[in-house]
Length: 318
Image (cartoon, rainbow, N blue to C red; front, side, top):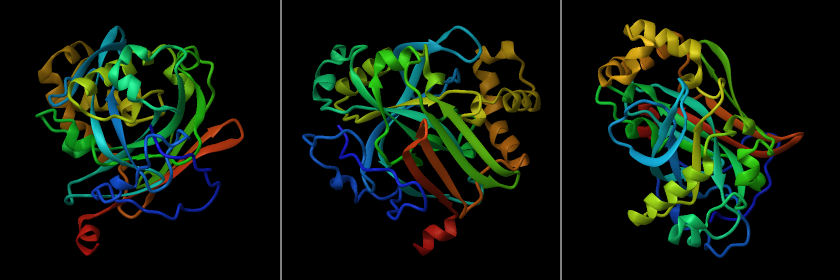
């Protein structure tokens, strides 16, 4: 399970900054016997990052759980474990001038009790299992998704979990739309101020019980420790990858039609075009500009965090 609950601040920058390239904070995680569920600022959390797209990425684990695809029909969940996700604050660093990052607003399933029994027996997870939902920023280095369709270089090591108490519930309430909450992610780019949003209602009907069981089952088989599970981007305003107008623009530029999306060749043409279109439209994060996340449940702020993207020169000076 995750470390102690911490109240979310309602204004101002959080004071602790954790680089995703540093592993020195891993030891600061408290004992799994801690009483509370959520992450305290400055912690590092092991989160399964989920890809819910239909793209045939080459380096992901394909899970047995399925969910409704964006273009219709059921598709398998895929993903990989990010063992170094900071809480509250993060600095991420470009490897060179070609690197371009966009954020995504995503929900993360956390657990208020010990997860040892789930790791030992994933079938112990049920609709009545208590959970705590928290928001996160999944950073995407779009230029790192090339014709080789490697997903991990673009999606691991550049994520942030919001700090705060989150939203308590159960898997059944989450699946049935009985939990309420929203994520707002904001950043400034050449195109102006951008806002990404996601609501808990966007997760309804996405087989989250199947997802969490499949993740714990995979991690048990690989002797990996997972502390929380990302739900992928859900909702039309949660990410560029969920924006149908942007996707149509990319498909047109790449010369790909909807029927071709079942072929590997089409995705190889699409992948590099995604970064090019985002850059041309001025939608990538500018170095030094913060990305802010605020998670709300009604009028209450239940999560907050900030990620800052730095260029290669900043990394060399740090």
